[in-house]
Image (cartoon, rainbow, N blue to C red; front, side):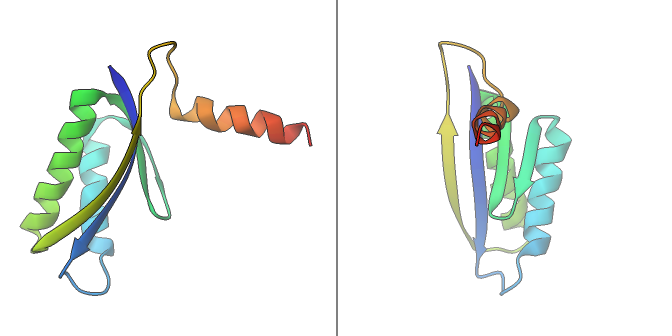
Length: 101
């Protein structure tokens, strides 16, 4: 089953600036080969369920390895069984409606 997730990893106890931790997580996501798109407050990732969840786990491992004693993560996810849908399909659908304005 494919899944689209919105992942937001927040290191706790790692200081005020956490951009280096987020960059490390982005490397994990990029190295996975999964389709993804970073945005201001997280990253959308799509692909097979087990592969996406393995990336989420690896992000936690890497951020802990960098010294963050705690991590809080927000994870939104969606699946469909009626048809295949990609991240861009969802954006395109809304853009098409906005084009009618």
